[in-house]
Image (cartoon, rainbow, N blue to C red):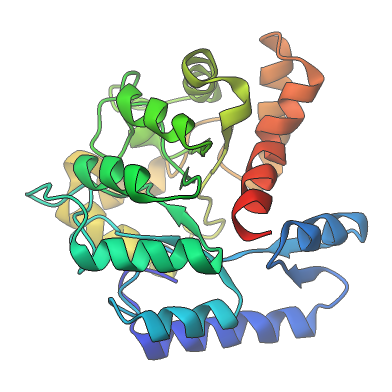
Length: 292
């Protein structure tokens, strides 16, 4: 569910996804627990975890939050790039931190068992949410600001705070967050982010959050949020034209290329167990800790 969704459109999207799963029962499954993920894997299915990019569909209404939980939502980003009732996003012109409503929503997410995602949050909102949460939280798709200066990436301070709560960060293949100084960032640039993070916070806290939209290069209308923010903040995301030329880092621009990360990690000397954890084991552990 994207930042522009209302309550009604969010519900329609969830219904459409359930319908898709019902039409492909041998290939897809909803996962509301870690056990569901493992079962889907053992049955050769893709496990789908319902998640929100923004909390706007329910604002600060805890009863509606509980409704979405009962629909199967298990991961929510508090704030997208701008501002909502809960706090400021990374592209807002202020960075006021977590609101009182934000604290209440976060507490209810903790109580229910919904993973808190802070990928697009502003710096103060990020740190205050980590501190206020009783559960581990996630940066599901963000890179290191030390290697790539962008307000969408996370500082070493934020990464270290994340780890103090037992959280996990997933690196992403968006070019502007991999290497904004390069016209053609590569898989090797992405692996540098993994190396920096594993050195800083430990391999058990690093995963993958590619943020792929497979059809985006051919059809930009499939992701209106990206078009909007590339138009509004090209300094952060790159231009709309960039999305056609380089939607993702070279060598890792599709799910079909995920094996390149495996090979790259092995070439860099990572142990098999560590590679498996980066590929998904760390996020599965976090998911189990938070949602059961």
